[in-house]
Length: 398
Image 1 (spheres, helix red, strand yellow):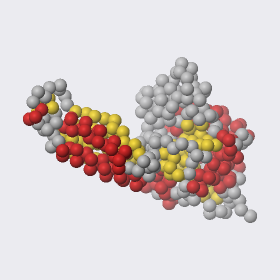
Image 2 (spheres, rainbow, N blue to C red):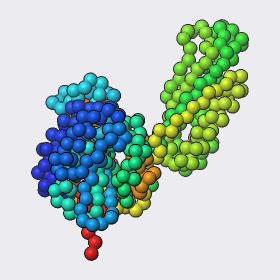
Image 3 (cartoon, helix red, strand yellow):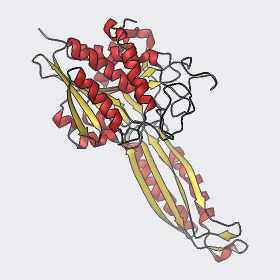
């Protein structure tokens, strides 16, 4: 691994920024202080700063040479509504809020790259540094795009990166095609007719009916969808009744659907409604059905994925890059950017957990965990990767 010496020299400075952001977590669309930290540092490094896209988003622009080529680099800034269990000095100062997904580290890695790129400018074209709010459920990428992100800051391609606990520190993983799934929610309200529990024949039982619907929905996965197409239906909520001796008037179930392609999502959404209504009708009940599409699948374009894999391989060695990593059914709103532009999303290894505070058990400590912490040792790796990506993408031509 050959890291950029100037980035290594600035590691303490970037680590301090990361830990400051970690100590002051802000939830989606409320990243005011975080955006101030980002904008202030960009400005101090002589980078053109734009604010207000997607409410609290920040875009830094670095230009050099005469080329019309451009590249976008994205980092997310928001935290999670989670109480932190860590006790180290940079633990969250805001009760009930925590950087438990490493967005503080993503922001710091991009800032480290920005500092170097502004000082050395060994490229020909434009670099758009996209600091995005509200990845955790708010769709901040979508909102920045609605506010004219790519019209105001044209990008030939966009790249993003997420730390991944359990992967060796500083390794990379990605793939062409689907990397992460779509995220969607459904609610099925079953309306029947209440009755005394000792005389259920006098009513139409929505609890019994909803239970049949829960079982029937899995037939969509096993009998409607092609076996080679990936899809998940998880019923995670079932609510009904207030008393043990009363059959209620209604019950409702809710859950999530995950797919890697939109056609499979279309199929599942349609069949969810058809199956639930048909089962309810069989038991003389009715259904109110709602389905909400949160994030589309994260699908890397082929050439941009190959480009990123090549850059990562040059940095850490091909054996430390998994170019066909197993996709995850988790979701990511960088997917909205990939609907607009070609690009690639990667995972960078966050290690096996040796960097973590003692007292929280062994292991890598997965994301969205109250004892999670970003591994500061990979900050210069991520920053160097972003720099090399820019320098190769915007390499001066003869």
